[in-house]
Length: 217
Image (cartoon, rainbow, N blue to C red; front, top):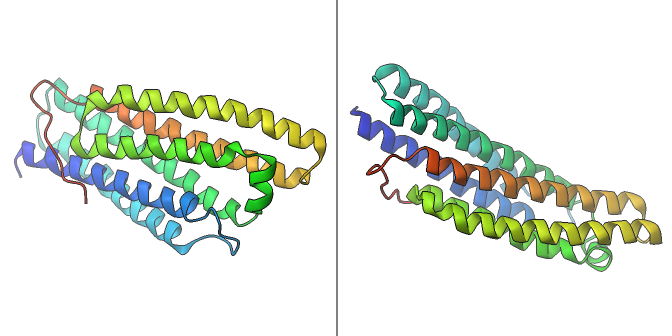
C-alpha cells in the first residue's frame, strides 16, 4: 500500500470514530432526555465499535511509521491521528457514563432544579457535530468555529454551577440527585473539551497540500 493510501485509510478510520462518537452522544443525551428505564443498549454498542476502530487506528498508525520512511509532516500526521483517537475515546467513555447516570436522574426534577442542563447538552452537541464534520473533511480551519462553540459551553456551564449551588442550598431536590446532575454536567464539559482538542490537532497534522475530503461513513 502506498503511503498516500495508508494516510487516507487512517483519515477514514478517524472519521468513522468521530461519527460513532456523535451517534453515541445522541443516544446517551438526546435520546435519553425523556428516558426513565436505564441505560440505552445503543450507546454501549457504539462504544464497543469505537473501541474496535481505535485499536485499528493504533495498529495502522504504528505500521505507517514502521513501514515507510516518514518525513516531519508524516510524523506530525501520525501523532495527530493517535491523539485524535485518544481524545475521541475519552469522549466516548464520558458519553457512556452519562448514559448510565441518566437512568438515575428524574428528568422532570432535573429540568426544574437545574434548567441549564438541557441547554448545556445542546451546546456540547454543537461542538461534537462541528468536530465530526471537521475530522471527516480533515479541515483544520474548523478550529475557530469549534473554539467559539466551546466558549458557549463554558458560559452555560458556569450558569449551571450557580443553579446547582442554589439547589443544594434549597435541598430541593435531594442532594444525591443534584450531585448526579452536576456529574452529568462535568461529563458533558469533558466531551466538549475532548472534541475541541481533537479538532485542534488537525492543524498540527496537515501539511500544505495534504488536505483532502474524506466521506463520512
